[in-house]
Image (tube, rainbow, N blue to C red; front, side):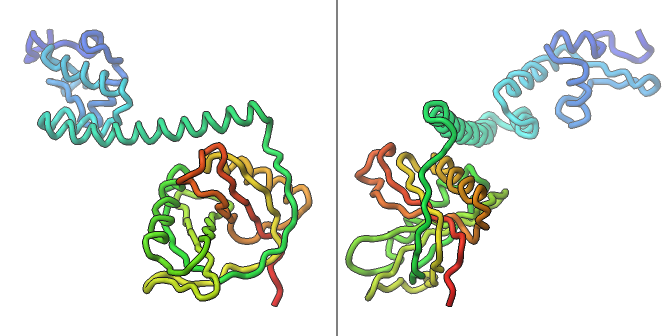
Length: 272
């Protein structure tokens, strides 16, 4: 045993077996300050641990097996039990959100398996310019678009406009999705309709649009959008502006698999 080293200390290899971690992991956790050795030999750099540290090593392994990120593992190990519960609640919420996203992806994949690659009928239609009230929301990536759209719709329907008759809602989404996605939802202001104070009013440009009808859940609209964009690319149509989703069905009274949505992609702007 090295001079000055407590006989109760364990070399890193032996401690790794005790704590069920690899030597590489222990070195990494030392660098992160997550699990420091009890002693480091100044001349050789060898790390030594106490058996009492094995509980921390095993706890790290357990939390990592539960997909808890290393920074959160550090907070759990260093905090009080009630603080640890609060920190882990955030991890649970993230895992639940990922599970929802995976289920949506699985449903879309099953649709492709059953029906093949998207090939919805596409046609060209002329759309006039329309006066609209618009609400905008930012989505933190493609997986957050559904939430942002729902928030924007709720804001519009909660007093963003006034008028009589059927409400025509239009969602506007960029063709290329980045880390932050600007989502807009507009309601067409018919003759005599007014937007509430503070709500943005604008004009939805008209033009010639490639159009297809999507039947099914909103979270599978991307499949029909793919078909429209592929149709445009084959015909060398340059896509202009956002992808428009015109919500034909009322989701409050329509089953998800029966929802009807018109998809519009501008290929020729209206001339003035």
